[in-house]
Length: 111
Image 1 (cartoon, rainbow, N blue to C red):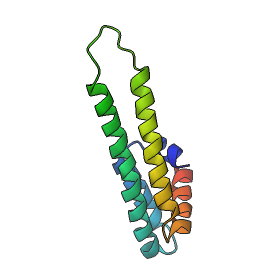
Image 2 (cartoon, helix red, strand yellow):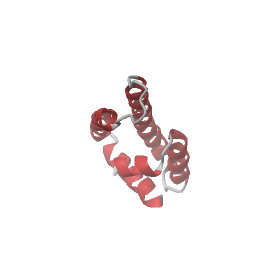
Image 3 (tube, rainbow, N blue to C red):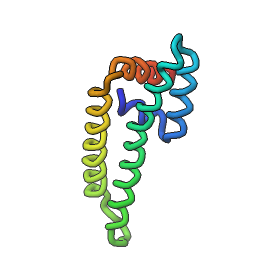
């Protein structure tokens, strides 16, 4: 679900807007606002890590007429997988994990 949410909300700003808009509609917005902040902080790391992985891999390419991007894509995908696992573990082990799951599911469904 987290991967799909990242594909739908392609920037931290889009994610932040959507999540806080959703929080305002909930019965206990004051409780979920804190949960939303943690979710956004954790997921924001993914946006940064993905951008850094692309920059690192692309900067190491030699200029060529027809560059092959297979190695770059594999390295970027591996970095994305590692980052995703770290964020998922962090969210799953948080004290408010159940609320986080509910909020992320609702954000995903609203997309």
